[in-house]
Amino acid sequence: MKPVVGIPLRSDELDDKRSFLYIFDSIKNACIYLNTIPFPIMPPQNLNYYHVKFNDLPDLNDEEKEIVENYLNYIDGLIIPGGFKFSKFDLYLLDEAIKKDMPIFGICLGMQIMSSYKSDIKIDLIESNINHRTDLDQEYAHFINIDKDSKLYEIVKKDKIKVNSFHKRQVYGNSYYDNVAYSEDNVLEAIEKKDALFNIGVQWHPEKMIYYDKDQKKLMDAFVDACKKYKESKIK
Image 1 (cartoon, rainbow, N blue to C red):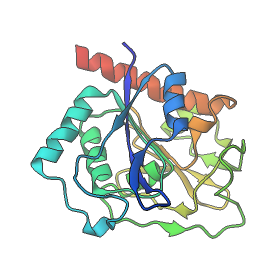
Image 2: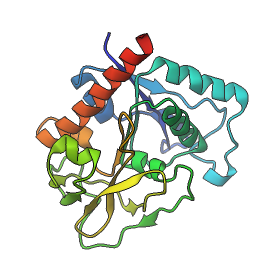
Image 3: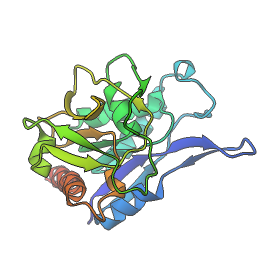
């Protein structure tokens, strides 16, 4: 059976003020293209994530934590996708996935969530001559420089690649993850836990690029390979 990739849903609001949860087609389609099964993960708390400020969010209770555990027992890897807001649920989901050494791939907001793991949240607006918030359908936005002593480098075999970009905020990393790639204006672009099976966060959107960029295809293939290994380890 194909590996199952969990994707936590994001929150938003319609013009008529009705809130909803969603998953981007680009993430879902990339998972299908890579021969995996995309599995949406519903936040278990009975509240409106869109309207409640992060500091006002309650911690998960025991029943809600058990629901998250059931999700994680079902999936073989976790993509933490882009979006516009994250919650304590996202951080708890990340923490539990890390404890299981489950493959984790953070994209855009997903990397920003990872940078907040066991650390104060520090996210600032980018001030730069480089446009980091371009049209996602634009093939490339800027170059990034990759640390040669990193898993990311081991995967793409290059210390400089060009990426797309759709974010207006930057993060600075934390003590858990290593900072392994920066744009030319010194914005942090990738973090990782090198000794993990796969635990990498990137600020760009490789799921949009796998159809025309070999480096991004290598990156997402490496995540899928890790999911397959993790799935096999659960069966043994």
